[in-house]
Image (cartoon, rainbow, N blue to C red; front, side, top):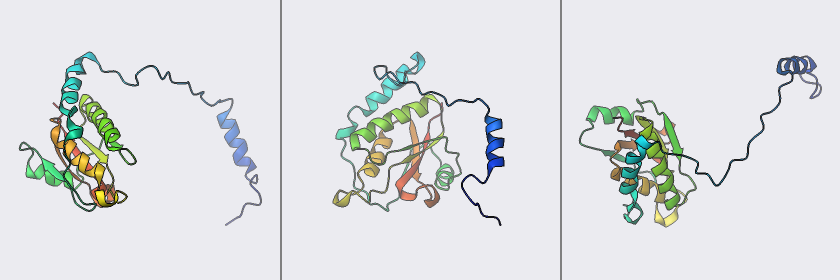
Length: 182
């Protein structure tokens, strides 16, 4: 194996790179107008968004159940088969979107989750992943976001089922969520 004598020893590689790149220039970032809302709702989705907002308007007052950092979350509606839940727990569904709620307050997480579920419903996504964390830094309060996610997801009709992910995908710090695609 050869060693580099200096940081410029690969002059042939640099020359080749420069000839391939040619006169390319970096793309200039445009300043985003902060006065405009970031997302818009198409008229055909307005009713669905109103329904989702109505389902989450009083959700913050809902007292979360206590969960422990290592506890597995599991929920399914009556229409979801045992086979479907088994496949979900094993990670057999393709995750098409995900959101990470780490570092958010409870109200920030609820708002982000509301927007995320609404977006995924509009896009008719079947399986998504929500990273809520294990709550190891929550002290005596226990895992605040994990308990919140557990309760919030149960209240949305768009959510058919959810369960903690395998260790390779976050373990008890994340959930796979099956959504209605109709």
